[in-house]
Length: 149
Length: 183
Image 1 (cartoon, rainbow over the protein chains, first blue to last red):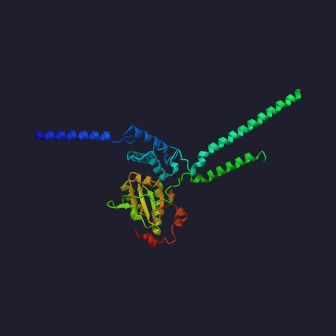
Image 2: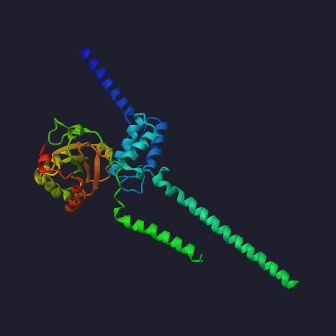
Image 3: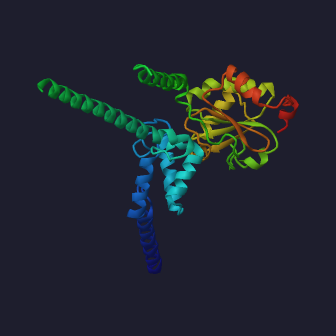
C-alpha cells in the first residue's frame, strides 16, 4: 500500500515537472527562445508587407494570413535559416511586393533612381536661375556705374 | 528652344506616369505571382474525401490541372462554385482543390449539398501550403501544365468570361474531355 502511494506520488511529481518544463520550453505565439532570434524575428516581420492589407507590415496586421506568415518566418528562423534565405523564400512566393524596402534590381531601378534624378534636375535648375540672377544684378550695377560716370 | 519646351516635356512625362497609374488601377489588388513559369510547389497533403489517402503533386504530373484554393468560410468561393461545377461538367480539365484553413466537416457537408467539382481535394489546415503557393486570398486558381509548371494564376472567383478568355486559350488545342476525364 505504501509502495503504491509512493509510486503514485512520484508519478504525480514527474507529471507536474514535465508540465512545468513543457510550459517553460513552449514558445508563446509571438516569442522566440533567445533575444537574438527575437530581434531578428521582429526586424523581419516589420520588413514584410501583409499581402491582404498591403499598407501594414506582417508585424502590425491582425488578419489570419499575417499570423500564418509570421509563423512561417518563426519556423524558418528556428530551423536555422538566415535572414536572406527567409527574405528570398517570401519573395519567391509573393514577389518583391512583399518587401517594404524593395531591392535594387533592373525592375525597381527607376524607383531608386528617380528621386536622385529629380534632385539633380532641381539643383541644376536652381543653379541656372541663381547664375542668371547674379549676372543680371552684375549687369545692373555696371549700367548704374555707367550712368553715374 | 522656346521657353515652353521644358514645362511641356515635364507635363507630357507627368501625363504618361499618371496614364500608366490609371490604366493599372483596376488591377491594383492583383499582385502578379512570381510562380508563373516556375515549377509548382511539391506537396503531399491529407485527402479531404479519403482521410487514409494523401494528395501529392507527384501523382498529378502528366496532365493539366487547375489548382483551386478555396474554403467554406470564403464567400467568393461559394459564388464561384457553380462555375467550378460547369468546368467539371465540361470535362476539359480536372480541378484539384486546396481546402484552405477550413473545418473538414464543414467542407464535406458543403460539397455534399452543393456538389463536388473536384477530382481530388488536399487539406491545408494550418495555412502553410497556401504560403508555398503565395496565396493571399481565396479563391485563387493556378493553371498547372503536365510538366508541373505554373502557367497562369487567376485571382478571385472564376467567371464564365475568365474561363473562356483567360483559361481555355492557355490550354493546348488537343485538350479533349477524354484526356481530362482520366484521373
